[in-house]
Amino acid sequence: MSDSSHPSGGHSTHDHHHEHDHEVEGPGYATPQAAIEESERETRAYVVGLYTGSDVDEPDFLAVVDLDPDSETYCEIVDQLSMPTKGDELHHFGWNACSSSCHVGDLERRYLVVPGNRSSRIHIVDTLADDGPEIVDVIEPEAIHEYDLSSPHTVHCPAGGGVMISMLGNADGDLPGGFLLLDENLELEGRWDEPGEIEMNYDFWYQPRQNVMISSEWAAPKTYQPGFDLEDVEAGKYGQRLHFWNWTDRTVEQTIDLGEEGLVPLEVRFCHNPESTHGYVNAALSSNIFHFFEEDGEWRAEKVIDFEGRDLEGWDMPVPALPTDILISMNDRYLFGANWLHGEVWMYDISDPANPRHADSISIGGYFGEKQAVNGRELVAGPQMVQLSLDGRRLYWTTSLYSSWDDMFFPEEAEHGSVMLKADVDQEQGTLELDEDFLVDFGDLPAGPARAHEIRWPGGDCTSDVWQ
Image 1: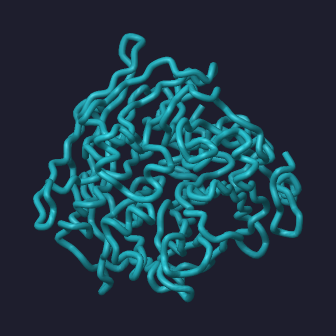
Image 2: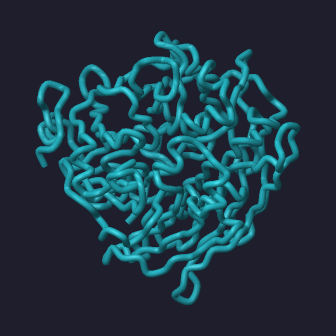
C-alpha cells in the first residue's frame, strides 16, 4: 500500500526488513515452558508515554526503561522516541512477530506497531536501528478510514507474518468496529472481518489449535473518548458480550452475553498452553472476573471472582474496584490483575481454572490503598496496566488508563505524571512483595509530567505471545 508516509527519510518497513546480517531463526520460543526456562531477565522495557490530554504541548512517545539492576541508569528512562504528530493517545501496542511465528525463518521480533487510539494513526518502530528506536513508517488515519475503521487497540501477530489490530469504531468514530490487517511488510492490507460481523470491539486473543478467536467489548470511540458517563451505561452504550470466532472462516460462531455482572469485558487472556480452551476476561465496570472455556462443543463463561464495591465519602454509590487489566503467568498457574480505583494488585492461583484461589495482593495507590507513596514519591492513581516477567518472578505496573478517564478519577496524575512500579513474585509460596526501591517516575521528564500505559519486553511477554 502507498497510503503511508515515511518520516525517516523515505524508508519503508520493507526496506528495513533485511538490513541486518545476523542469522534469524524466527522469533519467540518453541513452547511456553521454553520461554520460562530459556529467557534471560528483562533488562529494558518499552512503555508508551502520553502527553495527549495534558497541558504539555508535546507528542506522545515510546519510552525505553532501564531494568538492569546492575546498571547505573537502573529505573531511568534512557531513551524517548517522540511521535511525529501530537494528540495520538498511544494506548496498546505490540510486536510484528511472536512465538506463533517461530517457525517462520525470515521473521524476527524487531518492529513495534504503535497505534494512536484517538488519532487512528499507526506507527511502525524499528527497535534495532543503530541509534535507538526509529519510526520507519506511519500509516495515516485517512488510509484506515478507507476501510470504515478507526481507533486501533490490540495488536497481535498471527502466524505467518503480518499484524492484526482490533479497531473500536467505524470511520466516524461510531459503531461497528472490526479488525485491520497489515501484511508481512507491515503495510496496510485491509479488513480481516466482514463489516457488521460485530458491533462493539476491544481486545482479542486467538488459539490456533482450537481454531478460535475471542473478542471483547468496550464502546464506540465517540462514547468512551470524551470520558465516562454513567448515563451511557444505562443507555446500553457499553459492552457486555464475548464473541467466539471461527479463526479460519473469520466469522462469529457464538456470542455470550455476560449480563449486568459482565459490564465492559476488557482484556481477553487465554492460557498459554496451545491445547487449552480455558481463559479469563475482566468485566471492569461490574468488577468481576469471568472464566471462559469450551464444554461439549460450546463455549461457556462463568463468573469466578467478584470484587465488592466500597463506600467512599462524596460518592453516591459504592466505588467499584474497576479491574482494568489481567494476565496469566507463562506456566498458566497464576492470574494477576490490577484494581485501578481501589488500589490493589493481586494474584490468584488458577491451578483449578474454574475455582481461582486468592493467593496474595498489595494494597497500593488508588482510593483505598494502604500505601500511598513509594520511595518518597506520592502515588496519585491506582495500578492499571500490568506486565509479568517471562519467568514469572517480577510483576510490573503503570497507572494511566485513558487521558479523559484519568482526569475524571485521578486528576492529579496530569500534574504529577505516572509511575511504573514492581513487585517480586514467589510462585511457590504464592506471594507478592513490593520492591520499595523500584520506581520509574514519568512525572520527572524534561518536557513535563507524562502518563504511562502498556509495557512490552523485547523478548516477548505474557500478554502477547501465542503458540501454534
